Image (cartoon, rainbow, N blue to C red; front, side, top):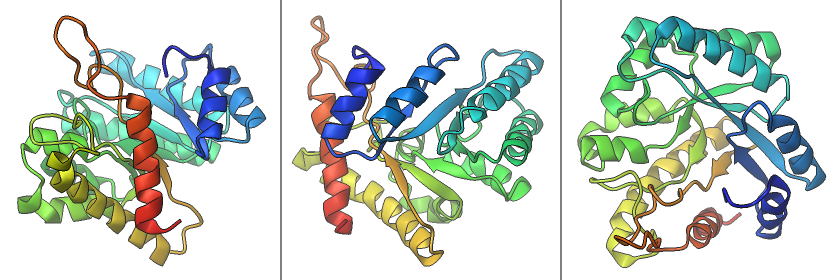
Length: 257
């Protein structure tokens, strides 16, 4: 909804039956994000990003960003942490920064599984899960499907370790050649949708057994770029809004909530 103001977006989100918004708000937009979601009775998740390829500068920016975002007291912070080209030790440093900020501020910080980050694949993240067992994740396994060019059936042990520490879901559906199917309603993507939904079922089951009060899910099918477009005209092949509303309704029906 990049073309809408936060106010218009929040009103549309509320009317569609969502409970909150996840917003990648820059420093100059965070006050507005907090106010608008509060005014519309919506929960707010804010996003954090490190910046730059120089590790020292990246680490400082990451820490400063986390501290600033935490001061707005969102429901939690969803962080894009590190880079796939940083060393294991460097990425662990960044994860430890997040843990320290969480302890200092009381605001939870989850690390999204995402291409280009330390968490870019199911095998790569295993070393971090062993090194930093207190780390918690945002599950966007669509990226892992894309990286592995498979629905991960041959590495379920890796996926299951991640499921055990995944506390938030991005319900994007990926496929073996991309991080997002063009339309999850289409019959040709039935198996892709079901593969992802079973992982989400497992996360929900785990949290239910732990008596967790909530499970948060962001319907995160992205805009043009993620969403395939026609050549020359750049016309999206499906409605991003309609697809995300479908995902919300699909999971509510699947889980009878």
